[in-house]
Structure formats: C-alpha cells, structure tokens
Image (cartoon, rainbow, N blue to C red):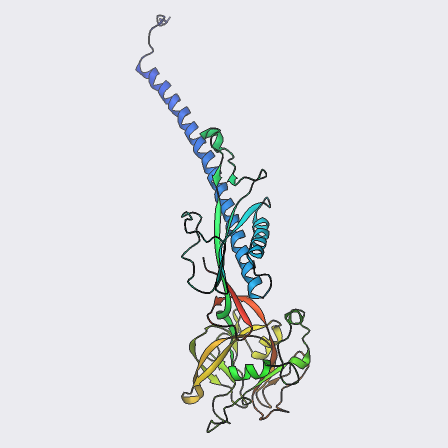
Length: 391
C-alpha cells in the first residue's frame, strides 16, 4: 500500500502552489481591467454616436437657416435658432438637443456673440469668412433634466459616482449668396443680353420669372415660356450680325456630359448653335442620350450658365466668359426644319414665327430658386442663389 502522508498543519504548500494563486489572482485582476475597459469603450462609442447626431443636426440647421435667408424668408438671429433647433431635435434619437447661435453676418452686419475661445473639439473647421453672408451654429446634448452632459452607461460603475458623463457638441457654418459654380449645370449657355430681355418684364413684353410653386407642380403658364433665339440680341454694330457669336451656345465637347461642372468668372470653350444644327448626344446618368430624350425626361429647372462676352475662335469654336447662372426649365428647341423638338408644355415648336430674325431657338421657363452649390461673390443678378457648408 502506498504511503499517504498529510502535510503538517501550518506548513507552506511551496513555490508551485504560490504560482497557481498568483496566476488566478492575475486572471481575476486582468478580467476586471478588461471589463472596465469594455465599459469605457461602450461609453466612448455612445458619445461618438451622440456627437455624430449633433453634427448632422448642426449641418442641417445652418443649411436651413441659410436657405431661408437666400429665399428672402425669415433672416434674423431668432429665425436661425428656430431652424437649427428643429434640425437638431430631428437628428437626435431621443429628439432632444440644444442649438445655439454662435455667429452670423447678414448683408454685412454681424449678429450673435461671435466668440473666439471655442475649444478644438467644439469649433468649426477653418476660420470664419472675411466677407459675405454666413451663419454659424453649435449643437449640444440635452437630457431630460435639462443638462448638457451625455450620461454614462457603464463608466460610473468603473470610475465612481463622481463621473457624470461626457460633454458632446458640434459646430457647423454655412454661407449663402449668388450661385458661383455648380457640378451639374446644363450645357447650354445663354447670353446675358437675352436673359435680361426675356426676364425684365412679364408678358407680353417678356416672359418674366415663373413662380417657383408653379414650376414644382409642372403647371407653368404657357404665356411665360421663353424662346431664347440665337440672333435676337445680336450687337447691331457687329459687322456680321447674322453669323457672329449669338445668344445661345453649347458648352463643352460634343458627346460630353449633358450637365457640366462649370464656374463663374471663367472662360469655357463652346460652339455657337448654327442653323440646321443637329444636337449631339450627351452623357446622363451613366448612359448616352439624345437631347430630345434628355428634355423629355427632365421636368425640373437646371442651373444654366450666363455669359457676358465671347472671344471668337476658329472653326466655329469660341471662348464664353461665364458671369453667373440662371435657373431654367428647358422644354423644347428648334434648330432647323430637320432638327426640332416641340415643347412638352404647350406643343409649340419654336419655328421662328414672330422673331426679329429666324434662327436656332431654345424654349423653357425662367424661375428663381436656391440650390446647394458654390457661393459666388457680388450681387444676385440672375435669380439663382446657393447655400454651402463652409465649416
């Protein structure tokens, strides 16, 4: 029989047993550390989600405020806060957030406290613009008790009751003014003289601007349909007014995009629309379409480049200086007996009847509006304004 002996009372179990205890203790301690780290990770993750919601609310809020100003609606500090507050609440999961006006400039006059002591985590990106209209909004957490600390989920259990949560905030800045550039401008350019003639007065002297609500419901008054004719505003001093650059041009290369990325105060290559011109196909939504198909499918106004001068070139190609953008809903065209598309609005074919001189013609409706795009400088001359996030 084997000899079984018990250790005397009080005797140590030896180095091997101490190692086991140390290992178990280390495992327990490391588990607590891991649990604590996971708890903090959860809290930090929720804090980042909260800040993302606040940033979305700030972005939407300043764009709503800028749009109201661009459309000559409510454009006051109180209106800014109301617009931002609504957007902040709509972007928060619990429907609660604070919106604060930090700074604004309206037609050259400053509004708001405009402090310069924001922390790195709450300031907007980049400096405030030196000129032009802008509004700057900050959003913050708002809890049920009116506090601004995002409450912890697990952090208090690890760090103690003294930890009440983190501070979450976001900042956004938007500008508004005349449209200075757009990535989807219609490839047809219109001369400034033609635009002024057609919009300077209501019918019958001119087409005027169609109200935006009529455009949205696609029920514009046919009497306000403009006919932009190639020779109607030719310069009488032009030695060859019948053949020189006129009021209508196709910008960009033949077969290029139907909607071009264009900027004001730039010279763009284009061609004068000649008589009996066959419109080239263009690219739209990843495919090649004819101009007829593009106009038939389009039922919304598009930014249209307006040019104020032309530098003649060889082979019918010229350089057109873009001075701004108008808002135009194209409906049809007439470029000659063999190249015509009646207006989908009233069936007219723009065949030159009643014109001072027959020639190529583009039909459509001018309106006023606001789009998201690059904000330009100077006065609003063509009725199309832009709003843009700038920080």
